[in-house]
Image 1 (cartoon, one colour):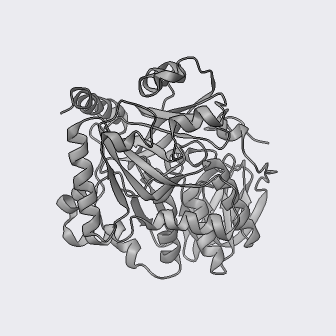
Image 2 (tube, rainbow, N blue to C red):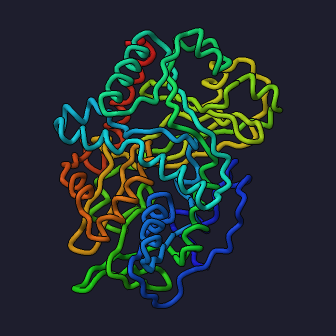
Image 3 (tube, rainbow, N blue to C red):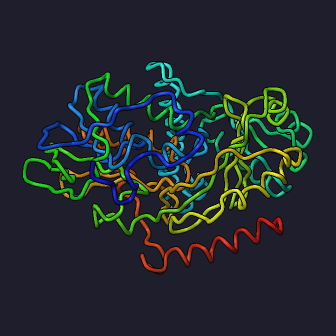
Length: 434
């Protein structure tokens, strides 16, 4: 088996999710020439979402993955079903106008609804639970949450419940928060098991997934497009590029549009039901509202899964535990004696505008990327919109494709350094509470 240059031998990196996955696939590598209606590059959430939607409409779909299903961000993330884009509705209104904000506001909960539907319809076992909490450290944070609740209500979404300092203690066994807000339409789950379950659903629908098949080239012709790998080729009427943070330079026109950013996670030893329930009594997941945020939840086997931090450019820190442990101990000082069993890192794709990008290259190559840390719901939604475009309904696709993308200051060479400088400023504001 030829190694995948960006993924070693293509097997999952060590993480709690890889160790606890409930489906063990037998990867099949693409060999020789294959024909399909649609070829999807990438077996993460974007690729799987678009492929399932197309397969449900009778298309012959082939997915080509350089490593294994969910190898990238889709199998390593916080597992938190958070509604909305990274860019807020207020930002979208100021930047693109009321009509675009109204359009975006009408679909912000759709990605979550796709996940909930498929978990039920395809019997995907991924420990899904409802409810996520935004936690506020300061009165200023609480004002921001009140404004968010009011703005979402203007767009017909009324699932947010504000929590004062006393109320949030009923949900989080920590004294560090000023208050918070529940999104009852959010939730959390085991992200790799969701991806693996979606892959199984796609195959039940007649789709094909080739793993350990790194793409080397995407080409167009008069009748369609082709995807070349190290040992084979897929010829199709259209290609959907969903490689996101791990696409590399396979499609040069897309390389500068997003920047890989790593985030880190760790999982404690099993805490037991009583101790775990004391941390999060109502079983919801949590993320705070700082610029450089922490996020955490309790797993089905009663571990605390805790994540946070970013490294622009996508490199891994030398010691994930050393980076995250002080933050976890600050929130939960009662866990200072707890062993960390797993620690890992992974990349998401950041767009400079913090708005995901949809587009088309030529006639037959479509792409979606740049969820900027909100990829669980965004990828499922944008996968559906990609499938609509392929089927001839360009209404929603064209609205997003028309939004201008903004290049990173400093270009490809210095974008990570410029972004790091900017993050320091926002981190200082978080520390000072301004």
